[in-house]
Picture 1 (cartoon, rainbow, N blue to C red):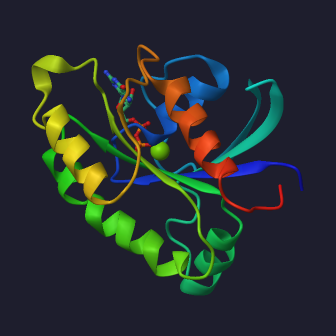
Picture 2 (cartoon, protein in one colour; picture 1 turned 45 degrees about the vertical axis):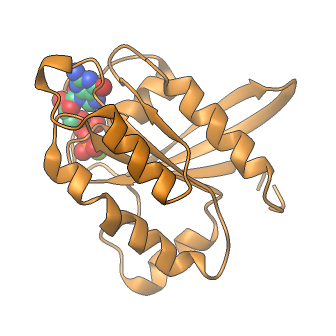
Length: 171
Ligand code: GDP
Ligand code: MG
């Protein structure tokens, strides 16, 4: 199928669904049912090319290993999310990356790391430099984003798409 498949992962409450919905529908959701696992589609134009994207929002989370393996195989790129207001979510990044690397042996795919809720400066507990350092250590691009103000939302997706293009996927 012709869709570029992107998956979000990261701790609960960091804004994975809000990010996805902000990107796809340009709106900010105050409350989104955390149990909804869904996929969203959007067409974008990047570097004069039309690309159909499908974003899987935390999709595979509770699945067994076999299904996870089958799912990861089909994904072209990952967005790993923490919140700049949530130390726990930053500490857990490594776990989420390890989970990806476990399946990545089989098929390569790019990963981008984002520190979301960048609009909540007064509640910040993770410095931007800490996020940057973590991302450099893992060889991933990094952005701080806000799913509320739309700050760096498109930049994140476009950077990920450009990374995905460097890999020999059949799209
Ligand atoms: P998920 O569990 O990672 O999918 O997190 P959600 O997308 O459900 O977001 C959890 C809560 O954080 C919701 O109340 C969102 O409105 C809020 N939220 C998400 N992203 C942002 C953001 O960038 N800025 C602010 N201020 N709130 C956000
Ligand atoms: Mg969610």
